[in-house]
Image 1: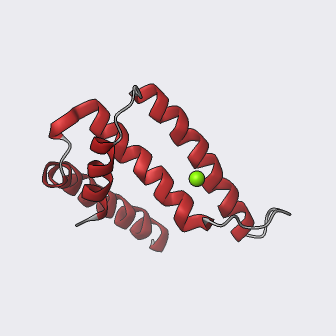
Image 2 (image 1 turned 135 degrees about the vertical axis):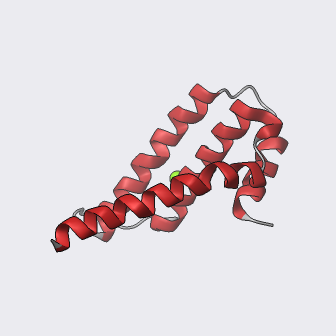
Length: 106
Ligand SMILES: [Mg+2]
């Protein structure tokens, strides 16, 4: 099973009253936790890394993002469909990154 499908299956199992606003708010706290772990890892904080560290906090953010898609789209949120939406975005990302690198290289 892939990470996305694992998260969607958990989203399906978690039956409560959460809405996309609730998930977004929670995602922002998780993003803050991730930012703090990055600060620590970069030596820009006096704090100690938490048990989840960067990987764990990034996964928390990913879980929130997949959950918000599931709660908003319901059954349409399946791995295959999300990959079909994501592929052109990934191509665009690669192309833009290449353009920036080419520009930097002169
Ligand atoms: Mg967290």
